[in-house]
Image (tube, rainbow, N blue to C red):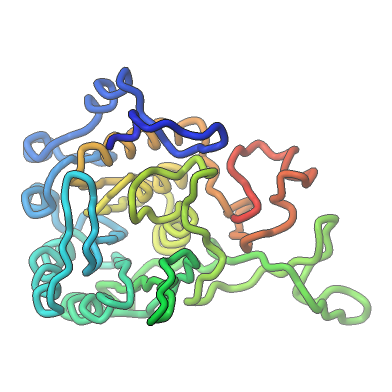
Amino acid sequence: METKNKTRAQRNRTLTISDSEIQSLDSLIYNHENLQKDFHDNMIVNGDIHRCLDYVPDEYFDLIILDPPYNLNKDFQTTKFTSMTSDNYTAYLESWFEKVCRKLKKNGTLYMCGDWKCTSNMQMVIEKELTILNRITWQREKGRGAKANWKNSMEDIWFAVKNPHDYCFNVDAVKIKRKVIAPYRSNGKPKDWEETDSGNFRVTYPSNLWDDISIPFWSMPENTDHPTQKPEKLIAKLILASSNPGDKIFDPFLGSGTTAVVAKKLNRKYFGIEINPEYCRWAIKRLKNAEFDKTIQGYHNGVFWERNTPIFSPKHTNYHNSNTNNLFDNI
């Protein structure tokens, strides 16, 4: 069912599209024939990855973010992905991964998202083409409970580069601001932390365990009906760490457009391929919204904040005095 036909509760901020918007949004979506004639930056292409990649130039992108279907049964509205054997899933990844890597610059970076069931397949496929530098684990908390198994509430993000001696990593751009529980003082003054009217905080280096990011949910304006949508905060960490303003970013499985939207908000150029036309419309509308609202939930004043940071409570003075509409309790 398309979002334009769904009735929303009053406080539900999930993105919707009306009948009157469809034509104008569709006019901004490209297909593989357009791509064949005129590739350029800032394109959203409705098409199949196998058909489109031949028209994308090699060694063009500074950063590629991959969030392909995991090895699960999943309904993506116009298409369904069916779980397969481990060997067959590896073959599926190999059918497009090497070609995707060709699009990466010699000093480029690639991130690939997966879950416990498919992450080992991804590691093997990535290592044939790139050098893996790390594996990020995202504790997303939400997951279906299981009576005879552990609840699945984590995902992996593989961090890989073409050249381990030449790649971009802006560590100062992805530091996290944490509340200080037991502040230490030297000569009576805060050591490595700061006192503020909102509490005591320390700016720390990022680790490969991310527990500060909520999945998108109904009260967040970035939320869509995509079944596996990644949070803007998560993608912002990848983009800020591994690219610079003006760099080119590619997402071959764009989904509802999060990579493109965050790239635009952070002054990067984007290019995305998505097979579902409805998802492409969501991406275009989100990009149009980003022209007026460049805030990213959980990223404020140049740092990432922990979830449930008190100053982002709707009752807090700083919240009301800020110029943003999407800073909530669960940042």
